[in-house]
Image 1 (cartoon, rainbow, N blue to C red):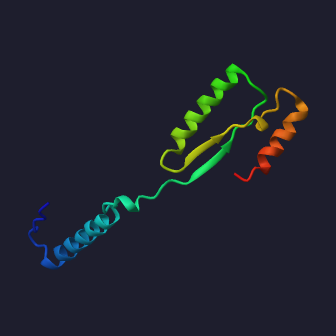
Image 2: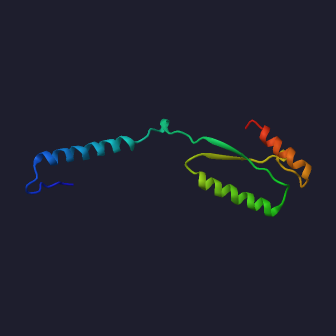
Length: 109
């Protein structure tokens, strides 16, 4: 881009403007510098426990949809790791629901 001097404009006005543009371009180049292969940071893994009332085909379908939607929303921010264990299921019993929740909360992962 060539900045032409306007009639009546002094060189002292154009010089700082050109300097400011050059500094801006150089600073943007520093921010967008190429990253070497060894410098690429891996995304942090976040574990998500999958609690359930019990096995059910509609619930399994809903769980898969949730996982896919969450992965799409979290893309570029975190790597979600979904954990589903038998201990996280209440097996359709009210009394086991609190135990499944407590087991999940006590899990160090």
